[in-house]
Amino acid sequence: MRPLIVANWKMHTTLAEAMILANGVKEGAAELNGIDIVLCPPFPWLVPLAELIHSQRISSLHLGAQNIFWSVAGAYTGEVSAAMLKGLVTYVIIGHSERRRVFQETDAEIVKKVQLALEYDLIPIVCIGEQRRPSRAVLDEPAELTVSQLQQPLNELKALLRGLSAKERGQLVIAYEPIWAISTTPGAQAATGLYANEVATRFRELLPHGASVLYGGSVDANNASEFLHQPNLHGALVGGSSLKIQTFLAICRLAMGSSQ
Ligand code: PGA
Image 1 (cartoon, rainbow, N blue to C red):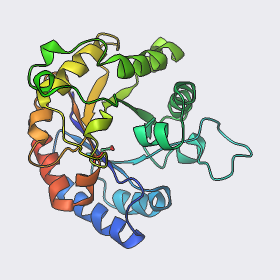
Image 2 (cartoon, rainbow, N blue to C red):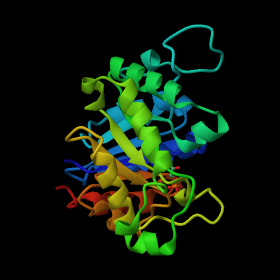
Image 3 (tube, rainbow, N blue to C red):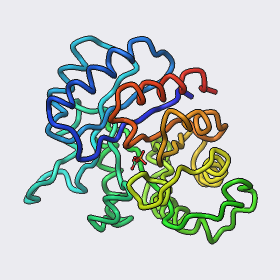
């Protein structure tokens, strides 16, 4: 499976910064083979970035959106529909913990968003993760992981899978993003590769064969290889470190050669 590295720029960058960043990644990506890189800028930069990226076809570089709405059209002031993004982006992040928490997105809305994404040929990257940090002992020795520690992500995953058809389930990318590890959470620190792999293994017991699972949460150039070389992880969702060209390219380079 080709490793997938997703840059989630969140609500950052001016247009000028976005163009510099995307151009830098584009130049670096020309030398990266065998991986897929997805840039997810804020909505207003998607069109100029699509022009920049597509001016010279680099097969490993794709665009993604950070969200879509759960309906395809109508009186929904301020929202963006999957239909509007079809042909413009290849991927869409759905159910990020910031959206679940700040915008109170529900599991049912997330199911609708995934269905619409697939209907409009967008690959959904669905974020799932728990609030509560496990003990140091469990992070180092994840075989000790209890069902109660994973109740929240497993419930989120089950709610998602229950709402989808077998065909839809087979087209999912899941991003395991423990909330306690996301760099903007106070006191955040990255999970361990072993722990993230163990959680991904439990996810896989519920997922159809071949679905990919990424890890996200304080990934940087120093810890990325720990996650990218785990047997049950197929890439990373990168927030803060995706805003620095050289750091992000270093993470992408580490992903090359981790394919299995
Ligand atoms: P981070 O963000 O890499 O800055 O922790 C990841 C995310 O929230 O998608």
